Length: 453
Ligand code: SF4
Image (cartoon, rainbow, N blue to C red; front, side, top):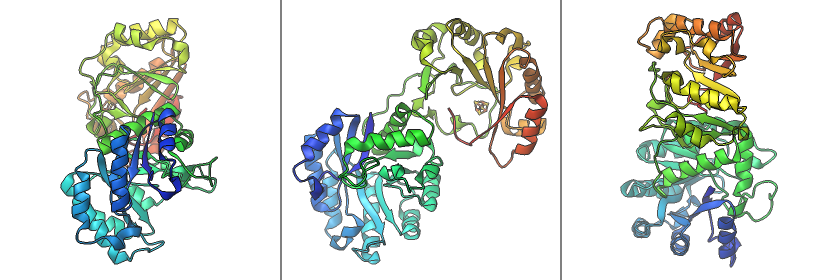
């Protein structure tokens, strides 16, 4: 299911079609709609609508085009409207110097006052930014740093993207990403997984192949499919990730946090055996979040062999089964090998993502025990020397680097695919790392910082 985070159901283009449009969306793949106000009238109309439909929420605000109507009473009126429990954001607000339907001075005043209102109500902002990047970011730096928000219908401004990534702001992708002349495809790959939303901006910006027609929330699937293609994910992944992000930003419903033992990304199934690790890498994603591509991986209780096997079902449904999670899987070696053998007997391809310290952890050479069961090992090394490894991993065992290299050499005898992976970090000499992998005659892969799964 998808959440359309930006629709204008009260736009005059819809006239009497509102009900039909909402029904079509809900019958399709859309679980919630956020209807956006542009002035006091449409904000009020949005609340009337969201009170009628359980799956519709509202944002109230005065659009930069309408900033000339902003007066001394506007904030009190918006404040009153925001008391309704279906109001989840202040928007759409911002600056638009393309049309200048209101003067920049009027726009800035309305924008700042509405940011202050959002701050007092602890609501996120929905921001319209067009040809006004410098002023938008300046105002947000001064008044919006403690808030959350989203830049709606992102059109590819790198400065906005970088600012959003460094702050608590999201980027919302509209049908523009599907346009043939759009440069958004390359940029969206830079948006962190926990920072992007999708929207139709209906009735505007209809995605390909509906471009030129009147847009509607049911077309959100075209945008989600394009994003899946660009981000090398499945439609299911995009739905899960963007739904979680929207629920978190707009506080639509509580996110259920429960132990996840197995989880799907693309057409691979991942096994989450432990959160423990022998390293304490400064860049470890666990220091930031336990959500990976929309899955919550913090474990209250580590799973048993039976827990995992009962969840997996038919292995032919998956390209491969990957022991990964947020921790070092070889810390659960006995459990891991039992599950892996069971799955291998049923024809699964098995990969283990590891820090390569298996022999240290097990206090013996286990490489031969993986023979015939494990098809691929992906070893996160991130350094070409012991000194660097020690600095970044903060492993308590100072021979860890040498032990990993020894493990690689042993595993080469028994495991068909071995890849050494390295994070793209300024402290890491990638050329030296590449040479190391070449000398060991194993595959070499660079991974992007903060991208897991
Ligand atoms: S090896 Fe992986 S799981 Fe362990 S601390 Fe480092 S980044 Fe985190």
